[in-house]
Image (cartoon, rainbow, N blue to C red):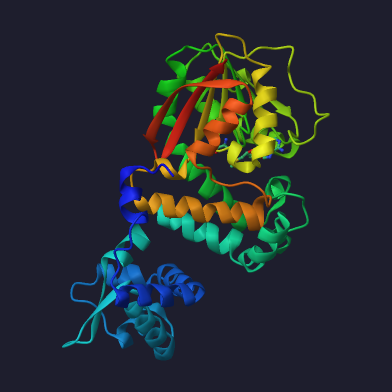
Length: 365
Ligand SMILES: C[S@@+](CC[C@H](N)C(=O)[O-])C[C@H]1O[C@@H](n2cnc3c(N)ncnc32)[C@H](O)[C@@H]1O
């Protein structure tokens, strides 16, 4: 299996001592409560308090400042100590923030991941086992009654919707500046944004280039949300929406029209291997020899830093239990094979964009 260097270092040999490995096993055994403890310590502002205190805080001081019982403060702080998010001074009994605790409150990626896991996935993880067995998102019933999460996005309760979009946007937004340079190096006049969601990329495109016209293709429910979202923004009149369910073979696609650029950002990971080949074949019908297809994905094996690969392979299981039951964050070798099976050729791959995206540029064979 091909892996970028940092991942190879971590994943091809066992570097833990026996004691560290045993601790890690217990970390996994208590995973759900470790997650909840850390989340509450951040949500109740206790980690912030500790960071802001000059010489740390005692249990009684934390209880008073957070308006919780001494019992609650004691349970949280003792557990936080053992999971490594706070430290204690054994002379003064004062607690301070550890480096891991610092990341919990200051790293934006960690924050969106915690919200996403708590609000969107937490209850559904309980159904991961059946979801894997059946290839269906059995955990999705904890949010609502839809075939996939995408049909439900526009009707999720506000705080769950915020966490879903917060997760989705955080990753893609951070890549748009670099992506604009790559896509607009070829000066496309027409761009099809497949799975364009709320129109954030389309707005960046029309703002970046006054001559480009963008068509967003997404589920009909999302097109409604997108139209609301782009209203009043510069260039919104050059964005049109096309409500299509790409899983429905009878849905019309604009095959009469060729696009100079087709953009798929964090889109193909919403589909199974077989579905991806079908979608790419249909996309290729909207291309001519000068067209380019830009696939922006977080390929788990092409990450510079190991924690990113960890987040991505675990996000795959969100697709299993919640999103649709059959898609994932792909390894680049799988994605390359699917692109070739669809009759396309990879021209180049740009890595290390934003929070770990790659852009695969494809053309007709
Ligand atoms: C993970 S979001 C990515 C959104 C955006 N491109 C980005 O990079 O932030 C996937 C998008 O694909 C759309 N989508 C999922 N299944 C679809 C389908 N069967 N047909 C059309 N669009 C679909 C979803 O509605 C959603 O907007």
